Image (cartoon, rainbow, N blue to C red; front, side, top):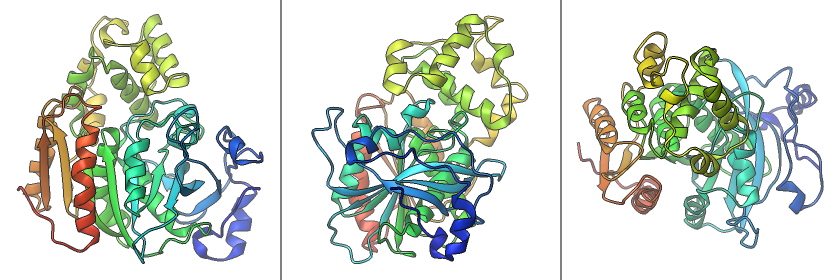
Length: 407
């Protein structure tokens, strides 16, 4: 049966008023069935008053492999919680709260894990892929659990819930990450401290979402006791990242961004696209997760998808896209917590200079930043560098040690 919690650990009446209208997970029984549940397309007619309130939850599972031979020994709960989109409108997103069976911490820290690029289709939501054993960031998540931390993984806006995932929307991603922490704290099914220590962690898209969350936190969630943020390979400057990706082996990511931002800002991109462009865009939106998309559309170049034969990167420099792209820029706001920024010099998706520029911007604003460069070849492989640097750095933050700076 679906486990429904009291919203924000407040009155039962508040839950009753929203539970009947809230999205629910499809009913089924047994642990194996939990991995195959789909979300109901029904939208809630009303939402709780505060962002971070949980609408519903249910037990879940976390496998490291698609054969489901290796199950992670942790308490797992899939959740639906309230957050806000870029315009401040209340929305529902989903996610997963993972709690290790044992921990050396009396007041267990919570790490908000912002996932990297998953795709746009609902089947790509991390909450589903964790249950299916297909989540490519499963090992970094498990390593955090092995440290004794609780981990909450957001699905972001539009992954696992109706609508297109607003990929690369700075504010929506950052808010979803921050509200996932509040949701984990308020979830009755797990015993996590309401006001305990918190950290933020993410790589690639997740690095951008983590960076955004760190920038938004002082005004959006001032009550959270955030000890630090681990930011890996953040796509902080969309113009530079788009120029790097379009036509590369990761060209599908650029198409994801076009779809995500057009959804967030209410722009119809069909007039820009030729017949091939529309077919590819719809396929990427509806059918393919990251690894499938990269295999099916390697070296995707946007100039072959447009009606005028010009690359879509040119449109990013013209209205209304120039303003939209500028609004996604990271580094214009000051994180109030120490940041570890990890980025490989051999990154073939997000140029390392983008990460260096973000670190420099934060340094100028007075943030304590440690820039950790490495020479791990390739964007995907360099996730290990962020994990190797990030785990001991987080341990120091939770132990109350002062953070060093490379500013």
